Length: 205
Image 1 (tube, rainbow, N blue to C red):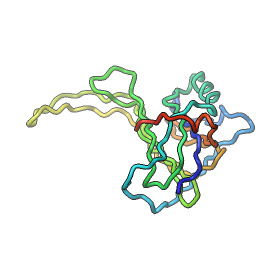
Image 2: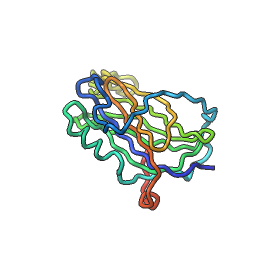
Image 3: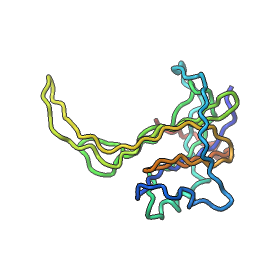
């Protein structure tokens, strides 16, 4: 049985200076960021045996738009992705992750991702849990040459990568910040409005 629907908003942003000097500078005095990391073991990490009907549905952002605008206007931060969706949390093995992928704007011979990974919300014994697995790749991989095996294989010098992999218990109305020296993720969850529930669009993986 699934939990009640929730409206989720996520901002992924990079630190332009590479240092997280004061990650709470953008918050209003009445807001607090929850920073504890609660690692729960669900015991439900099974291969999905069916497609769940609780598919994340993309909706208009309403909760973090002012915060996203503030980040966008600040010279030390760059927004990488801003997502807003509604879903019904289910058990982990039936959860459909939401993709964080964003392509580099720089020209490359092959498509490369500036941001990659996924985010999942699921229910464990009436507790909501969020998982983030993200990779920030600010520099492109560079072609080094070609090796001729049976078929030509192009060799690349791997670009710089920074990874963020966290799991945390979350609650309605809590503002969470997942920190990394190079980039961060802000997560917020509320009960959806009627307009959210009427949306039919889905988020592609």
